[in-house]
Length: 373
Image 1: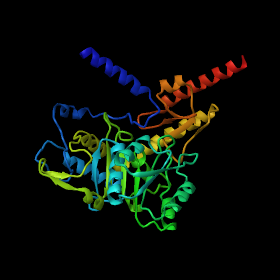
Image 2 (image 1 turned 60 degrees about the horizontal axis):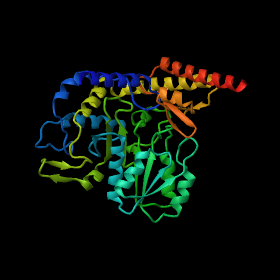
Image 3 (image 1 turned 90 degrees about the vertical axis):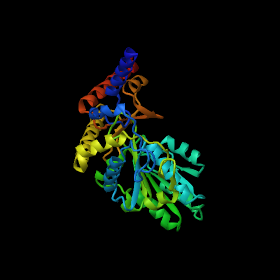
Image 4 (image 1 turned 180 degrees about the horizontal axis):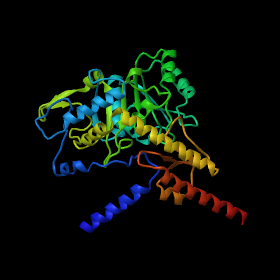
């Protein structure tokens, strides 16, 4: 058994060092929390509601929510949130509250939206329409407007991407509001999927409009993508009145039931809290700036060797023409059609970019030589 564990560890460690294609921060260490692995920790029920099961980290969880609320231009008086299992759960929760607010609504989302959203919509049995995307991955506002014009009498749920999966495109909230106003949509709900960019977008210039100061109803963010961690995590924040609509007390646990799952991970709040205490808001800004510099460096180096590479504004995602399957496997690159991307998350340094660029360059030269022959 010990040999098997060592083999698994070595495999994961090796692949962790080499991947470039997924938004998973690498520069973390939570060894101080190792003793907690010998404890059962269960944040059952609402984080604001004590339970008869007292083996939780809800006090820490609430501190984390306070930090995210501040980043997203709100506070816990006006909004409510909890630590989730990841962005997919956060999106599911936002859509669940939207459905409870407007049971007859139609969800509008772009074709560049994360694949899990279609699954969430199926689980919730919500009517939905897919909207075309622009070349950069942003939602096509003309197509959306045309669709809305035919359904202006229906409640609408707008699912916006604050950083699409492949190109890190940001849907413009101002354009959505313009369409809402133009067609006098009275009943609507706006959810923002900020899984990757939720902790980066607040510090981009110009800052994308997506937070609670702009009137959105809910926001989902992943914890393992930019903060980093040994297991998936995330946070969802919603306007408190939406949460109150679905809350009810459960005598068995002695707490309010307001989350997707009953039992919840009590370890990930400790990881997120540790990150917040170490970095704070200023550290988060510096972290974002450093990653943006690495992404700009990667884009520049790829262009220098004649590769078609580009980024959306200040994005950490560098899109390029898809390399060979060999390189995609070596660097674990996500691809779609004829494009792939590398994502310059914290923990990826210029030396790793140089190794990747050199491999791409060598592959390109080999291809040109083969054509000549």
